[in-house]
Image (cartoon, rainbow, N blue to C red; front, top):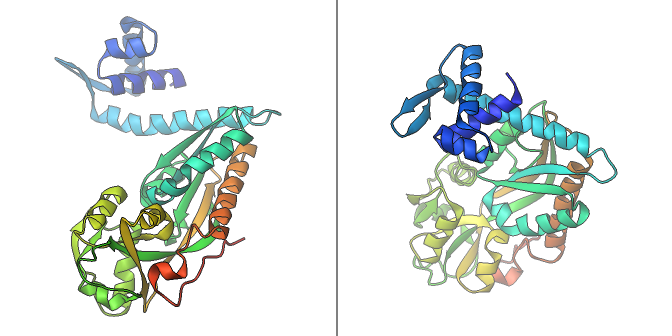
Length: 324
C-alpha cells in the first residue's frame, strides 16, 4: 500500500466518480481504476460500490478512509518537519481551537505567524473543544488551544496553562427577564431562560456542574451547538447564554448585548495550550505556541480579555492573569 494509492482512493471517494477524480489528479480514468483495483486486490475487499451516478464507499472503504487520512496527514507532517530543519523553514503547521478563541485571535495569530515564517503555511481548524482534542490525539494537529478537562491527562500530551477564564451571562440590551444591574447569583439561573449548547460541550458541563453544587438546575429553554447562533438568539432576546468576555467584547462595546457577572459561585475555566508527542516539535511549531501566548498576554494587558468594572456593575471585577 503506497501513499499515492491512498491519495487516489481519497480523491475518488471525495469526487464520487472516477472521471472527476481523474481531472483533479491530472490523470486518466483507466489509470485510476487500475490503482484502485490493485489496492482492492491487496486488501482483499471492494472499496467502492458502483452506482448509476458514480461510486460510493463500501464498508471496507469507509474503514480505510479513516486510516488513509491519518496516514497522509502523518506523511505531510514528516515532510514539514524535515523541511523546517533548514535555515528558512517551509511546510505547514496546523493549530486547532474552539470558535470562542478563533473569533478573537485567529486573524492576529495568522498575521504574526506569517511575518515570522513567510514560507510556512498556517492551517487553523476550528471546532468544539471535544473535536479539537480528538484531532490532536489523532495527530492531525501540531498545536491545540483548549479549555482544561480531565481528558487532557495523557502521557502523549504536553499541556501548558495560559490563564483562568471567567464565563459571563450574555443577553439582549432589552433585558427581557428584567435581571437589572449588578452581578447575578448563580441560583437565579434556575429561573432565567437560557440558550446553551448540549452536553458534552464544555460550557454546558461547566454550567450544569456549577448549578449542581448549589442544588439547582439551569433553566435551559433551547439547546444549540453553534456559538454564533447562540449569540444571535441571546442578542435577539430569545434567551440568555454564557461566554467569555473576549468573545463578545465588540458586541458589548457596540451596545448590541449586555453582560452580567455570575457570583456564588463564579464560573471559570482554564485555557491551556497543548501539543502531542505524536507530532514533531519543530521551530515553527514552537514559535506558534509562543506567538499565541504573547497575543493572550497582550489582550490581558490592554483590558481586552476581561471587562472593565463598570461593564458588569460588579465591585468584584477582576482581570485574568496569564500563567507562565
